[in-house]
Length: 273
Ligand code: NAP
Image (cartoon, rainbow, N blue to C red; front, side):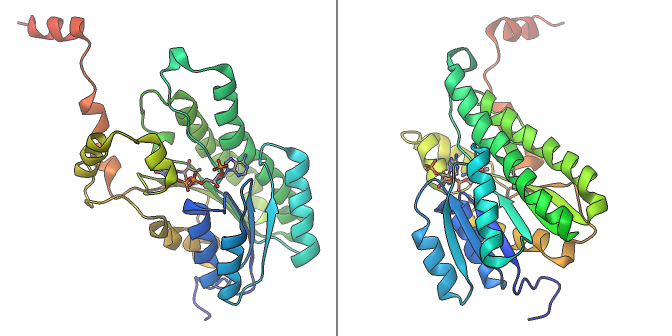
């Protein structure tokens, strides 16, 4: 292939690879030439099968990204099989929706541990290898929630904002080692996660759809081009960025306009001269 986006014979680790965005990214990287280590707490059999059908090598590793020992064992398994790691896509994530006053400590910890600590542990274990190699591309999946407020999502918002600053910190520290670290902030995407949140809320989903300049939710495949760009030599001078891939949603930040006004504030505004 030999284009700036060619990933032939690269080795990519993708977390949360059993379904949704992680599965689409694994297949997209394979189409660009990369071998794939598919990581998840769930079975990754279907992802591996599709990657292999494309003529690339693939192994699956069952890992809870919150557990340092499991993450380090997964990196060792990758080195035993492939001898190097070129690309890490930190994608595994969960969301728990609850008003802040009702959110349990356990739920807060779970979201922060998977979404933020998990990315730290994977980046740390892979970063040690990349520093020795003097090369590497790390792509952290954040969200539009990493910069814009969604109510009843304090833990998720905080975790995704943390991912953006983690990305910038690693980019700064590891730039001298020839490692690029960037984040992608997806907008609303049609995956099991979206429908889990909005079950029984078809009206809200329709409203969100109207707010999108490009007029549709993203499909997981919409992120592949950005991932390939950030994983390839085409982005060699790009580091520390958070790229919003959101169908233009953040152009208008429409959500904030829909929040009902506090009645006392509404009254006070009415009484202004
Ligand atoms: P998804 O369909 O729920 O897939 C996430 C995968 O990660 C699942 O297979 C999940 O397994 C796995 N996972 C969860 N906890 C894990 C752990 N501790 N260790 C290893 N794997 C774990 O979600 P998605 O929609 O594809 O989201 C992928 C990423 O995009 C997430 O970081 C999410 O925050 C972000 N994102 C999604 C949207 C959206 O609209 N969907 C928007 C912005 C950003 P389980 O099913 O067992 O949890």
